[in-house]
Length: 291
Image (cartoon, rainbow, N blue to C red):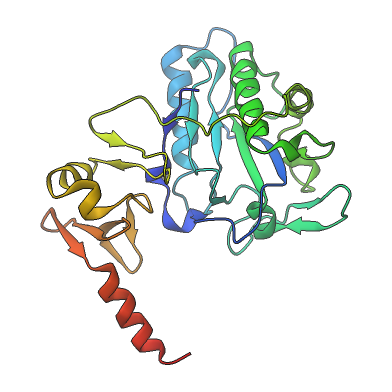
């Protein structure tokens, strides 16, 4: 499955690392539904690709703190696939943190209700570029089918009735997801009870690296990948534990966490510095005092 990885672009306030001890219980179908997100016969490839890229970018950094796990692009662009938030993390597609949009889902069998941020913790979200009343094109349906079936293979519980839902059925003023949720439920039932391997990283790129061990991208937007490679690599730094993101409280610093170091890129002098994770953790513990 080929996709473009946007996970390193996601702002820190648009997702939460991990799932708070929860497990995936439901897959939620969305449509982007923006005023420009329209598929039509004869649409130029360049326009469709721009709309697709814009939709994926919008779900990485915005004042609504919204994000999603996957975006399937416009029909005329060939329905390109984007990974926004890795599935192991909590994306804000049914409410932010704190919840802004109170979607609510009741788990079949248990009757347990999940809403807002808690619903995000147990769900995977897919956004289909287009309006809610559009019929998805053959490229979009083919891409969606492959994606849905691979996800269901990783989380077989999603084959059970009621575990693939349209966003429209979870929130009163929503209309999205209804135009492809029935197909998704049908595709899920076709999946054999064999768990396939995790999704592969994007094709090799000298300026991008996504280790499957953690799923976070290191790239050269701020030179972190070249620095990692030339300053010790895996033995010195370890695997990435986050994407590159603006530091909380200091927008002039871009930081990325690794297993044994934190890298900082200072926008004012355009240099990379190292933070000492162990020393920082010790100082934090000393501030908190005995527990």
